[in-house]
Image (cartoon, rainbow, N blue to C red; front, side):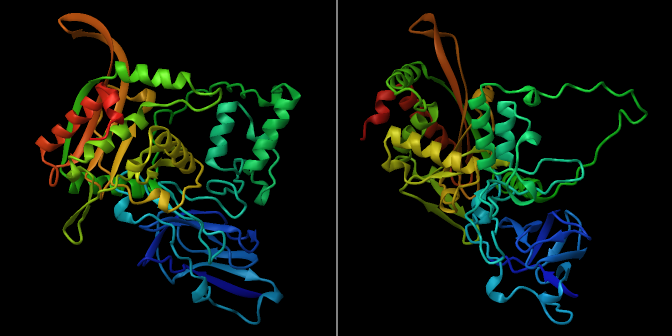
Length: 453
């Protein structure tokens, strides 16, 4: 027998330490080479570290939330006789160091999330997904691989958990073919197809009845302490930095979207059955493209290190997207070159890629302005936080029908608010308001959205 000490590798891009997010193994566990042993997070990415050897875990270093310097011992394995002669205390070769390629630059994520990368092996990193814990493991399933825990938690990805919840499927009934019985996408799809072919859900898939509430105990009014680590810590840090460093100028304007709604419904009525319907966002982005020609100061990024504002002629729109892992901001590049239908299709593509952890580095970086929508939860108004290093963000609120005064009479119109925030250091209040007013004119007269000056 011999021992193998695995040290925290150089994760690239100037990383000097990493935070332990979670251990996937514990002393005494048997692991195979390439099994995920630990998830760590740097300022650049969340990374799953695979085991470099096959053997037994002797000891681990640190608890979730602890910072570990690069090059320090992370985990000790006991390996078999064939693994090497003597007590080999080594690290992975320099050529196998994990490099955080495919990771969004920290300055480009702002307060809306953190990009992540997951190596399939110690010397390979798959494309990153923004503001998630990690992307697909080497078995091809989306999300973070989870080993069965002591509470019997089914090992699968957050995306599959969401789908199972929406379909009312008990994941404990789904056979898993992945590592340690993990349910991968193919397993879930096969199970769903089998259910459909049999024409019934079956009693085992019905929601589990609620258990009787236990008798009140002395600690019923107690508290729970949750350590802020990993992605949540990074999000908290980014949001604090954005609010502390960026003087936000908020501006909310009411818009009459009655004509836009009529156009949207008309265009959707022409779609073939099964084709996805248009939402307000493609119209908004197309109108924004037209407006930004006159307000280039809002389509920009601030390089704080150099003290330089970078104005862009092309419009690269970040689309804030809620996913099971957290908020991500995939990017529609060169929106100014796309038609309404192309914009809608590209927005669906990149947001779906973000939700399923398939987005590439290019799809998660380089945005020059962000749009965000709370959908049905849109509310009356909001104060969106700027996605640094950008200087502008536009938020869509809920559209509702209500009585308004029009041409001296009371009538029912469909009204919606746009909530926006601007970096007041570089976008003056007058210019911000003028931009939103110009956007309002396009939205209220949707034909102008399709007319180039």
